[in-house]
Length: 421
Image (spheres, rainbow, N blue to C red):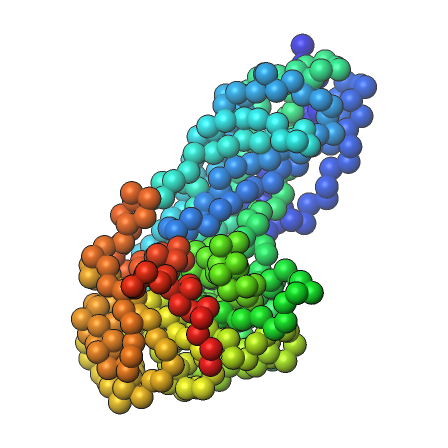
């Protein structure tokens, strides 16, 4: 007969609400019923196609040594519900809310004695994502996550009676790569995330990489939604530059990712000085080398990368516009960046796109810009495929986040790192 730790199951109200719950006290396991629950953490990874919850860790170390031999994928069940943090208007669509059981692929003990439940996840697999895309807004939002854990078979403790946990309390969402970026707000009110390299007495001033997000990662101010989160969770664009590989290549670099209050293409000339303000502030406050500031961005941010080099021709050592917008996507109206402006760019520029991009046609945008920007380089892929999975053709930023583009044996990160203003 198993010993219950609590009397009932309580659902956490969501990722945000769960953070406010009190941490359960230690359970005194020498009696019958106990009033405390077991807290759990959601662990996520940002895949190329967006962030997914990949495992759950149950805080069981305080319950006494658990025999790992009794753990199996069937010991616990995991149910996940993900809903929009803002109301969805009638007739509008959001991708991808869900309410389903997650498949547990493995159960094990970590070195602290906590139970880790590995969850099935993969590119394109529904039901594990942390973001939803609201069609009418053209925006990603961080979904409210409610995870329900159910124990199906008793646990065996090495020094005690069998144990059944009946109450679980949802804790925080943990993504080490995302959490490494600190939260900030500029003097003008623009939110941004900042990765700071490890301090070393052997290094002086460090490079700064400015990442400008795509259209889906901006704020939705009509809904009072400005989260400073989706820029790091929707794709690996900025995270790639914070990986150990990139940090070695750049000899330790700051990575800054501002979040637009709408989308950069709405008014690039107005946003440009707000972005420059963040860069200049970091140069003043951090050990940033003003001769090694690089700008990269995708889609909407690819446009803004070009706009920044037009507005500030002496600010950047290199620019990497990815599937950037030059001509208006609807085909009507003046170009976002004129031919004269493109021809006047003097910042070393490496453009990236894919031939099958049906969102930002390469011929009138990236290829056109390459033809006009003096000395520019270009990587033109046929499609976007990584680890055998084919992504939409617009997602060529995946290649840059993986340091894949190369010309004459030089990869794009190494090319950037060698540039000086």
